[in-house]
Image 1 (tube, helix red, strand yellow):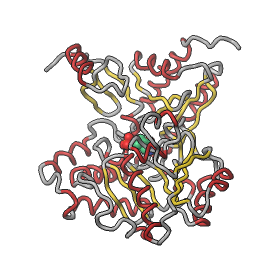
Image 2 (spheres, helix red, strand yellow):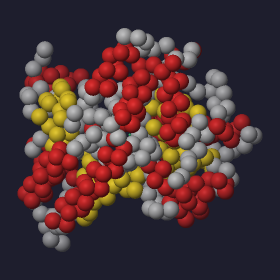
Image 3 (cartoon, helix red, strand yellow):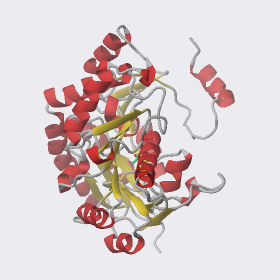
Image 4 (cartoon, protein in one colour):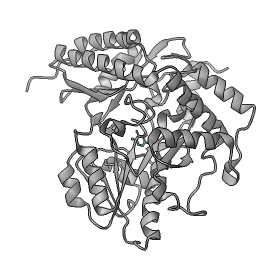
Length: 406
Ligand SMILES: *Cc1c(COP(=O)(O)O)cnc(C)c1O
């Protein structure tokens, strides 16, 4: 096996330069910890970007992968497979919706939902109803359709004309959405908490207001729960905190605990909106990914993980808020929902600098937006593991150079 410097040499030559990885190569994981090729251990408080809901190499996931790999892996959607059917019915039950389309990533789930919305109106003789309204600083993925809905111009630039009929309004501003929406609006796309945009939970009443608006104008309310779904908020869906039933919800990230999978779940009303031949995915809903997702859902129930998330979130957010107060010259405050938590830093403090110093101390976090530290640990993280992270954060914030006084 190649050593660390050989691997880094090969990476430098052969991995596309669209990311900016540090000179570390991860090789092993267990629970909330990762190890690099030098044997250094890291506490993982970002979980592969809110993906590894049960941490790394959880026995339930390993067992499901092994069992399904030796039974049936892939057949494409020319035939039903048992695992996909079981998973669809589980997802329908847990979301309160009816019909599932499976794919392999978040962006694909949003692409599919966008196509569903437009095709639904088209089939009803309303071919001009193609408008999509999303929000500034939203994140919906990187494919051409999804990136067009993503509310950050830097992500569109240089890729040719953006998909037409997509516009953006300020997140949380119901009046702005009301002014923009009309009888040409096919769908509104919304995150219940803007994840990448800075861990911004929707203001109270916002999602219910969007629900009412969509009912009024006949547009689909598509809720992007790719980051917030599958228990991360403490409920199966984050919108369930607000008692809102979307027309379509998109899921991916945590759905199979690290095995690639995505899906959208729609109301019965949309069952025929994408007739045979109009949409599909070769890998989507393969028995392998579906079996792993089923095992994850079962484990969430068996181990009471959602209640654990709710309890742990309350404790962690109060500790983060205390941290912000202690380092008030650096931090503005804490916010979040469930185990998607952010610490906002003051202007002039680069969150990446904090992230790097945390990593030097063996704790991995992510950032969100320009000024926010993002914590999205495995949902099974313990208070003692989080305390380890908070201790490192306290030390890093204490030692951080203060911004020059204005
Ligand atoms: C990560 C994310 C996506 C994109 O998912 P990919 O699997 O990277 O395509 C879309 N929407 C939200 C809210 C996300 O957090």
